[in-house]
Each structure stands twice: as C-alpha cells, then as structure tokens.
Image (cartoon, rainbow, N blue to C red):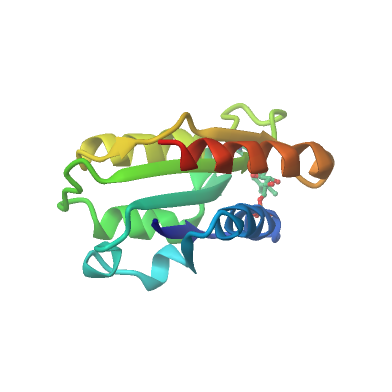
Length: 150
Ligand SMILES: Cc1cc2nc3c(=O)[nH]c(=O)nc-3n(C[C@H](O)[C@H](O)[C@H](O)COP(=O)(O)O)c2cc1C
C-alpha cells in the first residue's frame, strides 16, 4: 500500500508516535510518506491507499481539546473537499487531566465524516505518551498491524 501519514506536534511526542507507525508499516513492505498537514494540498493527497492523521490536543483561543494549529488550517482549507470512500485512520496524543481528552481526535473524525471518507480502524487515543512511552509504543505497533489487515 501507499500510505500517507500527516502529523503535527508541539513538543515532539506526535512525531515520535508517527515514526513508530512509519517503522511498523515499512517493515511490512509498504511505502510510507510523512508530511505536515500545512504542507499538503488536496491533489497531493491523491494516490494514497490510506491517510493517517496524528495530532496532539491543545488549547486554542481559550478552548481546549483542539487539534494542532496546522490541522486546524488544513481542515479549513479542505472544508469544501470530498474524499469519497478514501480510507483514513486517526491517532491522537493527549492527557486525560484535561476536560476534553484527545479532543483533536473527535475533530478529525468529524472532518473525515463530513468529507465522506471512511475510518479504517478505531482511532487511537494516547494518554501521557512520554510518561508511558513503552506501553504506547506497543499500542501504536498493534494499531499499525490492525491497519494492515483492513
Ligand atoms: C497548553 C496545553 C494544552 C493541552 N490541552 C490538552 C487538551 O485539551 N486535551 C488533551 O487531551 N491534552 C491536552 N494537552 C496535552 C498534550 O496533548 C500532550 O502533552 C501531547 O502528548 C502533546 O503532544 P506533542 O508532544 O506531539 O505536542 C495539552 C498540553 C498543553 C501543554
């Protein structure tokens, strides 16, 4: 498969998570491209069998549970586009001490739904990545394997 991973990060966790997924998918023989959502346009998303999106949840203009600013801009640029039956999968890094734990995942799921895309697997919500890195490396690896059997 030809796989695109869009990710954005503030403190590096989502990049590490994206690289864990990339390693696993490449090990299985797939072609993987990593990109920032701010650097991609609609045409650039063609030709991929599945698009993964990974974002931290953050506070934006006084509201918590928001996606990374690059994903907010991406969703705004893509708001009139449709991705009929295109497969997506979402992972999010967050912290359950915030009221809207992994709110970014909910926003990205809504985006996929509105754009008529399909969620290939259940979204992965990660609570405290750096505190539980070993556990989440295993969960990301298992989640990547699930993608391969869809
Ligand atoms: C200012 C700030 C706001 C945050 N807001 C949320 C939030 O609303 N919901 C959540 O689940 N996590 C929240 N987090 C936790 C981050 O999403 C978490 O630390 C994540 O691992 C950061 O990913 P990154 O290293 O890729 O930037 C917040 C963290 C900070 C510093």
